[in-house]
Length: 121
Image (tube, rainbow, N blue to C red; front, side, top):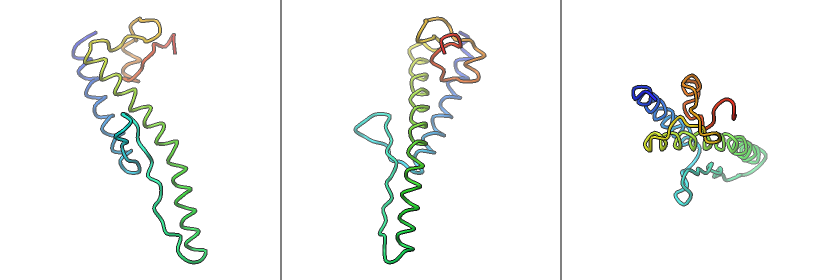
């Protein structure tokens, strides 16, 4: 595979990695015990008195439950990006994990973290 193309893809992956980590930092904390795992911050609230305090608490819990699947999806994307960057370093980038054939450049341009060729996808 062309070295210039690989460098271009590497830069794209690094920018995307930084963007995803930035998104995660807004609502989650990196788990130091599990590499690649982030934990959505559970709301820290004092329900307070009356119905307005309970309503605020309910809203915060609802937001937390909405953020959990977003965290999960971002973690998966980040894992795939890190895997692609690792493959670039080990010179195994662009090879299908299932059939061991080269993934098309067109596919890699669209999805630089692709692990499988279109046929195996």
